[in-house]
Image 1: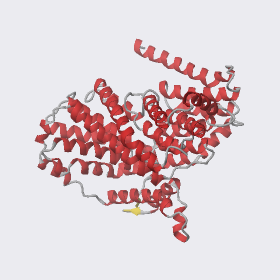
Image 2 (image 1 turned 90 degrees about the vertical axis):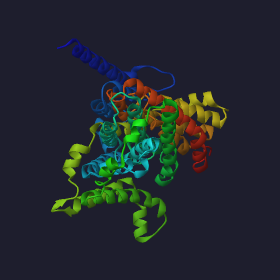
Image 3 (image 1 turned 45 degrees about the horizontal axis):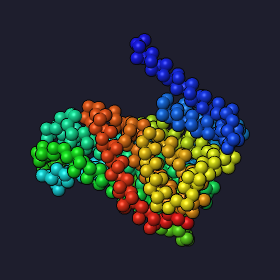
Image 4 (image 1 turned 135 degrees about the vertical axis):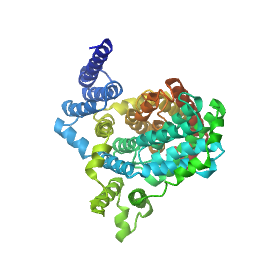
Length: 491
């Protein structure tokens, strides 16, 4: 065994030891502000964050659920697992991963991406082309799976770079490819079926005992414009701060783009996938539009995101194309279920519920600490500091971890400071979607930093932190007024 392999193995077992000490040892540490159950829950939460950061997502998630049954928060480990897997958000995540895999396999994702990249308006307009790449990455990631879209758009861009003469490591390809990943990550901040939003919605409902729920249509109406403005802010930074050489894009001919456009016609399978996507999004929105109606409209008004995805998958499995089901469920489940995402969701929700519970007393204690710091503070000053701290925190803590702890604390603090928990939750989700300045921030950020050939670690840091800074300015100037107008920051 090589010295490097030995070092990695030693580091792994050291991290595993720290995880076990946090998860099973914190309950024995006396703290005047928390009972032993609260300390145990705190240790499980911190252990989960540590495990996700330094070990992986699968077995730390499993063991953290198990620990909730051992520490006494749930009566038995079986009850803990039953709670985790009976949560409708976990089931929804499982089904939506299958659906996004179906969209990928159908070829729809590629057609949507190529449509944005091949518009005639980009010929002879390098910066128009650049913006269309960023916007297209955001839109397609919003519609389907941002993780897959990053690799898809990157591969399309490699071909274009070869066509016009860009080489690996040059500034324009580096910052554009980084922007593709940034746009994809931002899409998770405005789609209620994305993992960050799912966990934030679940944490809000758990910590407020169901008093606050998210209206999906209103949520998207607020967050989509803000996230698009973040993408535009990165574009401005790229054009006026980084100022890469775009002259070679003048060689991007209409003949080359026309070859791409000639392949845009949807075949039958792709057309069905697009229709299924439209139906799914429509069923997500219908409850808001049909609230209070009777008959069939009343039935549709009772749909939620789980009902919507179930109906779409049932229909795709039921219908036949050339004698076979439109949806090959086994194949999509085999290739599309990212188990780390599933286990993150399965563990995050019960752990979040435990952290925000009255029995643990953690959020009540943290709320008292926050109140002592910000009592009498100006609302705008608090919101600015809150946004900056949360935004920076997610760069060094996986964005899922941030949502887990930040939403319950926000609910606790909002009650004493007279703030609207919905508005604070939106701020947290947007901050969690800005997780691209370090490889620890999110899964896609890790992918961004791993592209050392075309982007490089130094350029990844430059792009990420510049995007964070530009995004905060947009949030203060544009996001705050919009969130305040729709939700209201104060109760």
